[in-house]
Image (cartoon, rainbow, N blue to C red; front, side, top):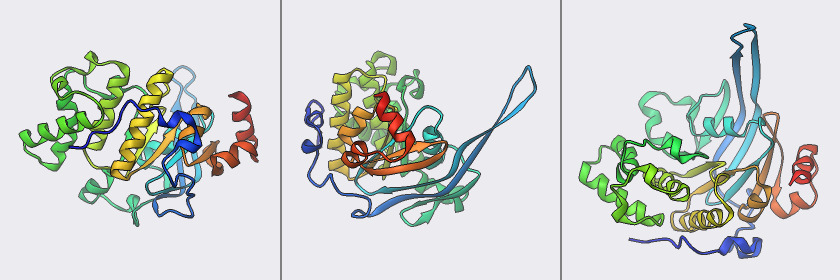
Length: 284
């Protein structure tokens, strides 16, 4: 059983302390996921006025995610980041467009065909307390996704305990309920649960924003170690450009449902071209 180092402070030193090869760009790496011309519209109905409001969340969105790398996705509130994350994880279906994962357009699949590929993109939310069933024990929470693989109960429990240990939680805490854990520990539980299905991509939707800085450091170092161990990709969605700039390989800026700028962190932050990027940098 390999346990990652959950207490290191490697990433806080900045770009020079990232794992070797972290300057690799999308062009240098194999593509694991590609979003093409994605559109998503929400219809909101006001109860009192009975008015219908059309919200264009995604507007011909294009995004390429390289394998084994970390991509930052930034933008102001309402720019479409969370909508894009939910569509990539197939928690919501876009109105049109394509989502290619390892050469397969996921939106062309239906029913049983989707079961295996949809496991390969896992979403970790900002508030793990809302995502974790409070009635379940920690080991039950981590093991639950394995039921879809029809693993027997004892094997699921053993795998769940291994995953808890891998993310820095004691195996002896397996019978604790989610609310008995601290915020940082609950986020570790959520990560362990996502790892159970052996994803190719983990999408972290503001998953660190509710944690204080020392806990952010611990969790990000854990994620970097897990990436080196398992070789998956991250999409880090955050409003904290300082955090994004210190841990990602590239950053993409989203504005009004589209990716308006993308590049290596140092280059994009030093010379932003789009007004949306300039505004984000001025606000931090």
